Length: 264
Ligand code: KIV
Image (cartoon, rainbow, N blue to C red; front, side, top):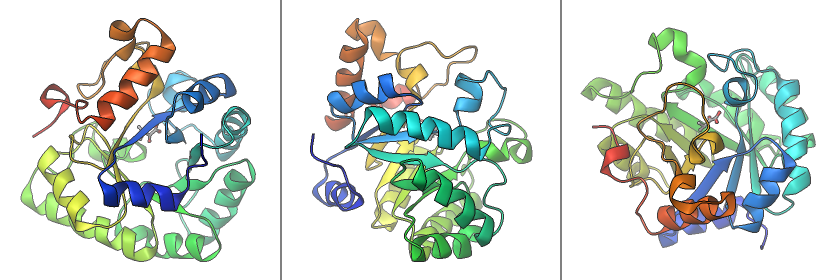
């Protein structure tokens, strides 16, 4: 597979070709994902829940993400790898740069930060120093205690307008990709149209420029609560490889997510 770059992802948005992304945390899965054509792998801090068994993502450290980024990169030389910046590792531009540098050295192509306009200076500093940034708006799991639970965001008009303004601010600061999590599909569509950078949705409807799932959800092995936006592709496909292929195909054909996976 040809190397996926940030320019390729932007071109995909411009040409209406959907981006298929998955989380991964090790070389075996990253190699399987690359072999089957996944465009983007996120080393998500979701590993605090699906690998470490926590009830949220807050205990994950920068060393954890760096370790798993190294593992993922070892299995996938050409896939675009995003490393998540954990809780409180980017609370100042200086912290953001120092911690992001470790993730880039571990093999990431980009780092992801959760939050809106307040991240402007950090994103500007990261970008100026050669570190590409992915924003993350909506249900940002590191703020679960501020939200009072894992709740859909942006449902009222004021919150929706604020999220559109945040998305524009992140792009103006230099962000080159944007994850939208658990927001009404109409809002995700409005944000996708308001920015020129690609949006990657999870529980954000079919009109985003791409989709992402936590890999454990793709194969139906997430413990406990199964989110409405997820789909077990293994059930239908029968093999892990088949599940990955079907996911990419369904995302690219606009068949996933369907209305049963969306929020209003
Ligand atoms: O940590 C993660 O896996 C994420 C995705 C759910 C987008 O942030």
